[in-house]
Each structure stands twice: as C-alpha cells, then as structure tokens.
Length: 140
Image (cartoon, rainbow, N blue to C red; front, side, top):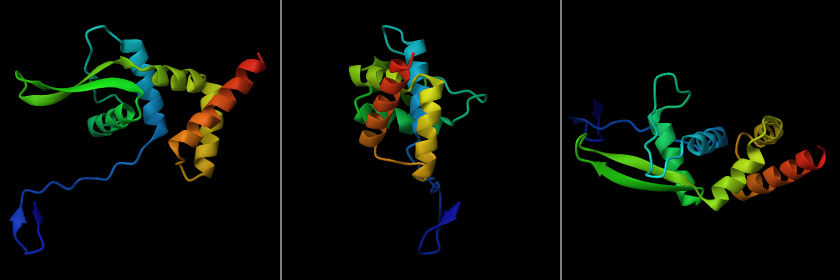
C-alpha cells in the first residue's frame, strides 16, 4: 500500500516506467516469425523468459504502433481479462527483421546503441540496420 498526498493509504500500484528496448523488439520479431499461426496466437510468457510479461506487452503495443506487427486486443471471457492476439508480421516487420536477423549485424548495431546511451530514434536505427545488412550481404 502507498500513501497519497493527503497521507491516506490506498491500493495504488507503483508503475515502473518502461523504456523502449530494441533487444526485446528483435527477440519478439524472431519469436513471432517462428510461432506464426493463421488464426492468431497469444504470446505465452514463462519464468524462463528473459523479459517480463509487462515488458513484452508494452513492446508488442509499440510494435503495433510502428506497424511492425498485426495485433489485436481481445477479451478472454473464460479468463475474464484482456489478451493480446498476434496475427503475424507486417511487410515493415519482415523488412526490419531481415535487416537485423544476423547476429553479426545485430552486434554491430548494439555497439552503436551503447555509444548512444542505449537509445536512438527508430528511423535512425532502421537506416543503420539497412546499411549494415547491405554491407554484410555484399561481402558474402
């Protein structure tokens, strides 16, 4: 329980601010591509997962806003809660994933991200990923 500004105790839950994490987005893109089923699916988060359900859901919503995935919020009457159903990657989602799929490319981008304190505009990251992928595939 937490006290509000009047000193009253209430049931407010402290919400931890979430930050966009491109490693989570890459991980989700890979998972969604591998798990795709025609009727849509819900991502199951287990204790073994590296990220929490809250982090995953937050990033799924960000990915929907960026038009990387097809996502719908539905109400599960049996569980009496909202559930996120994933219907696959969009063209943009496939394009981004194809440019960051290779571990060597991803590691190059992580170095750049760390230099920029862990964050850079998505448009810049996408351009950097495309350049790195072009260079990577041209050298093969």
